[in-house]
Image (cartoon, rainbow, N blue to C red):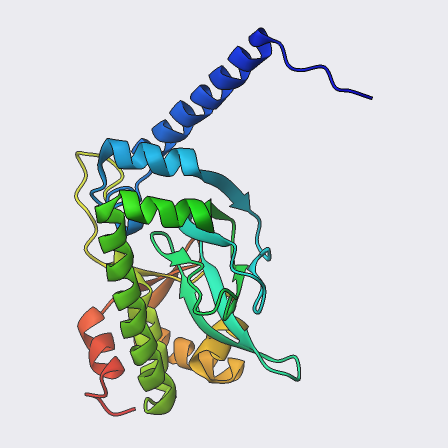
Length: 261
């Protein structure tokens, strides 16, 4: 049956809904604490508006598959909250975790049009998803976005080199210390009047199994090493899957092999 064409009022309503969606997404981008770093750094209001209109915000529960290795790389993801584990699959079904992506990082670059890795959410993850054609158009229109992406790629190469050193040369104690230091950030003050706590806190929402896989260790070795660092009062557990670094300098010496194991 022939379909009735939409009336002028329906066209107007559609344009209004798209405008409201863009404005709402723009406000989300302006309020997002990731617009001052990562891909969104210094691209301005017009750039944020272009990103908002070209992306879709998603909230993914823990254990969600974001990227399937070997599938067509059709989407590009900018993580704004949560942690994603990256892995490579072996022919026998085993997986090797190659890294963890956190807020401000991106996923989706491919060399031959296919994803070269798999990605799965560790906890609840918020992302901005771009379809590849729209994102490539944004790179041409927003010079700052292109520079930010180049910086991010350079950082990922440095992380890959560090991971090779981690797996190839470091002891179990050095690996765990390096991992915790790599997951740290300085806590921010809860209000304008409070002073920030300078003690670094490592965010570790992933399981010990995932940590062991990433470090090339057994879960028993990871647990034993973390317990030893806790007994030595170098670290302590906190709420929300975090570990507080009580002695960053001492842990750094361990990570760089400056102390005996």
